[in-house]
Image (cartoon, rainbow, N blue to C red; front, side):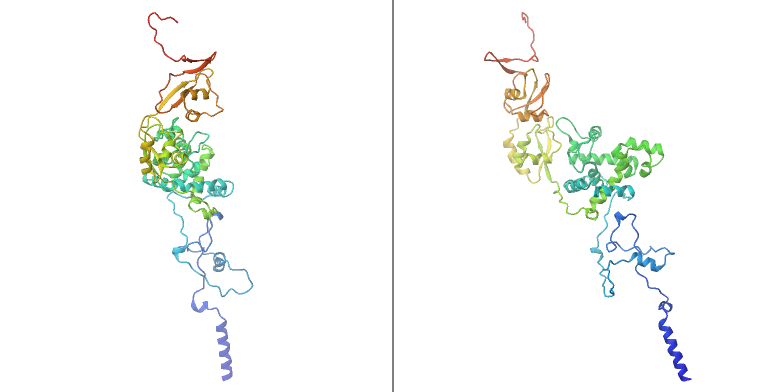
Length: 452
């Protein structure tokens, strides 16, 4: 009897050892919860870098725990038949984890946005890399100007897709500068554009104008996507589209033919460019050599001041002065701007003020208008006024191959201290004798007794 009891006890203990522990604990072992799945492969991040999910998130109730565990928790261990029981998992502190980029404009990631991300990564990669390299030259102060005007700082990336931050950009529709203003819109927001100067190319002045325009657009549409579309197509075009299709949703408007493809693509391009520019390494743009941030000081300058004198006073090259002042179209500051502010390299103000007084005595430059006559050439005209050819070329938009036409007006910059000769006075030789012939433009008042 005792043997039977011993055998039964052994069998009972054996059964207990074979049963699952979960029957006794009432709990099932589970792996960490799943991470929320991204909407597109282009925006997926490695599991190790992703932040842990919110405690409120839970897996679908109809999914078995084993399936959930296998699809989520991947440690990317080496493939081997040997046991991996001895691995150790290192959890980085929160301050070492890469923080997600923050945006102050709405960011929507859809198929159109992904299309342009891929385009910038492949087809337009070379150009986009160049734009990124140049962007750091202008972004810091442009962001500050947008912030000062109460606008989201990330709107700076509109200039990225407009011009690649190129002050000299000029489109087929005659839009100019980093923010690509056409003449009427630029004039409406205070940008002067004439033969001497084009303030649409001034990074500072054009950014202030763009901020004012974008603010007005947002006041109209109360949506940054519609405001951006209005910046591209004009506010009337967007307002008419909204009225026609009875919607205030930009993405809904892109389903119809009324808006041009350029406008439909404008917002997706803006979003794609913003995503890449704020985290270029994530999208494969590595090792970019960014240009140094633009720094300058402004000084008031007399009208028609030669850029060569300004460069000499600053002890820098003329190209450095031109690079800081892309709005200047000629070799000098514009006339009728007695207190024009020109940008000089940062830290050169004292040098400039000291040297410019010596180099520029303050006498106003003189110009002479010459009316081209038969037989005139640029060489003879330059010799007549005792000036170099280069200033005549530059101020009249000419070159060595340019042809003159009779009656054409040329602006001649005269050397300081030189008295202008009568207009159209050209020296010619007749039988070896030099003659001074007055041009027909000279005015003569007939007196009593005069004959032809």
